Length: 329
Image (cartoon, rainbow, N blue to C red; front, side, top):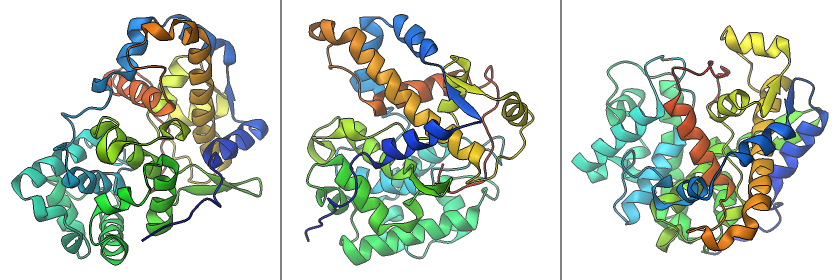
């Protein structure tokens, strides 16, 4: 089956985020801090950012086959909002589902997903108590299972293949077929697209397959970073993202920032734009030394992986992330 999705702007996320940043009042990007951060990076640092270990294969199920794509779609369907349970982190989910797949590869079949319950999600992850938004996570997995059965013979690998090696087309296909991935908001009367989980699925497929086979995309550089709650903390600590005193005090006090509010949309949009500017600055600095870069200049998603792992590594030392109850991240 052929899908024609060219009508969607290929730079829809960047354009949306730039509009928000142009009108933002709560969040500001410090371009001098971006230059300072890039100035500290060495060729070795860049090679580490772009190297094959940039994607954490230990934390995920990776077998080089179609089951990997199925696993990644399941993980990314429920990759959001861990903070309501202080002990729950992304790695508990990714490792928990990995263990379940190793025990029973059919546990993430489209048929089983299409009828999964809240306690079933808990069992899949291996969590001992009720998950935050447990029933919503179950609904989203049922949506994935049903849509895979209806449109892709039950296989996420067929979904990936339908994009014909285009990262943007795959992002669009995911948003088209799975309503739970349609990550958008309305900011000052304009629809803003952020598509965190749709993009991260594409990025995970690229990373897990090391850019080959199912993970070969000719336009992977078109993806932005994945606007979440961990990377903004790192950018704030680096001085790249600045908050008004009022917003900063709300985040530090762990007050909930409502989903879709100006503050929340500005945080997410600024994260996208800041990483784009970081990438551009990094390219400008290292372009002349391209021959020394083993894996070339980094894409935005590789900068996301790097920043996210920095945030995870320093989680206990860093200030808290903003708290927003959402299904999008």
